[in-house]
Every structure is written in structure tokens, then in C-alpha cells.
Length: 293
Image (cartoon, rainbow, N blue to C red; front, side, top):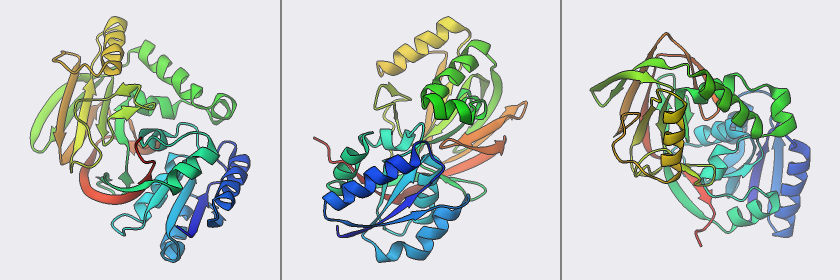
């Protein structure tokens, strides 16, 4: 790898410091790096469509939203995308096993391997790589203040999630998976592409793979705090035996409706109120990922 394009969001947490560290790491590796700063929502995708063809790979530096703008713009192109941990949650970078220290991340990705992964395609044309959903995850994003994210980083999401769990605001969900209809009350409903969360500390469901040509519906329905604790314990232990508070379905085409309508999210960005539909786009993205030891 000789030339890379670095698409960076200057508004991301610790953006300038992380950008300097990334550029320094590319220089140490003898790789020519062209940094370009985004100026508005959607600009990352425009940059890639205009300039990516002249580079060996495109690196993203920002939050999951910046990463997904780049991944979506380069979907089905074969151009490899490398996602650096420059945001608050860094869900995608963590799921891919990328080190969180910037110089280590650059080195690991430059020496990494290409991996084709599936994407989720929403009915409105937007794509997601990690997950889309409603309930606790969308409440966590909707109710986390930018000030708190800047102050304590991912801890702000943890606090918002804890508040949502203790409120126990279940929603009535009607989900359709490849024609099968599912209806129940739930605290969280996710269409997920990756099974691991927080560097594999939690697994969202059984045998979830990002390259199997499927998405996975995960529905969590705790009746109280005891159920919620049991669900978290079982997810941390990868224990997916039958449980009345957990439901899993793999498929290709999905629709999610809720009563009442509520805000949904995809890869950390709010996408509007339910209902929404999605389908899998097999092997649409080419990512650079660290080599497994």
C-alpha cells in the first residue's frame, strides 16, 4: 500500500489530536496520506465518489456516521475501507477488532487483510454496517447530550442506556422476517450484522456473522430488572438457550413496526420514526481489518 485517502471529521471527539497521530503513523510507515476534512453531513461520501479511485485504500477518521458515509459511497466498488477509531462509541471499529490507540490502529490496518462484509440497506436507500433498531439503543442515542459525549466519551452512552433500562418503557413490536410475522412487547429490537459488542464482551445472538448473506433480528423483552440482568449475563456468556425474554431470527428482508411509533437508529444515527424496512446486501463492502493472531 503506497497511497491512502484519509477522510476525517473535524467535529469528532479529539479530532485534531487523533488526526495528527494518524498522519504521523502513516509517515512512519512510509505511506503517502492525503487528509481531507469533511465540511457537512454527506460530504464524506462526496469526497470518496470524487477521489477514491486514485488511492489504494480509504481510511475514515470520525464517528460511526462518518465511517458509514464512506462505506456506503464505496459499496460494491471493491475499494477497501479502513475504519479508524475517531468517534465516541466506535462500534464498527471495535467489532472489527481494531485497536483503539491511533498509531496501533494505523499499523494494524496497513498490515491487515481485506474482508468482504454484508450491509443492511434501508428502504430509503441508506445503509448500515453494524445494526439498526428501536428501543434502548435508539433512546441511548437520542437522549445522550453532545456535551456529555465530549466529557466522558462512551460512558455517556452507558449512562443513557442505564436510564432507559430502569425506566422499563417497553414498546409493542410487530416484526416481519422473510414473511414470518412476530409480535410482542420489547425493550430493544435490533437488526444486526455483527454479533459482538464492546470487543466481544457481549454477543447479541447465536452464530451472527457479518459475511453470511443474512441479517439477524434480536428481540429482548425483559419483564423487570431481574430479567434485564439475566439477559445481559447470558449475552456476556454467549448463552442462547431458549428464554422467554429473548428471540432471534436470521433472514434477508425485514420490516419493523411499533405501537406507538418511536425513533429508530442505524449505526448510531437517528433515522426517523417507525415503521422502517431493511434488507441484506450481501458482501457489498470491502473492509481492511486487522489480521487475526
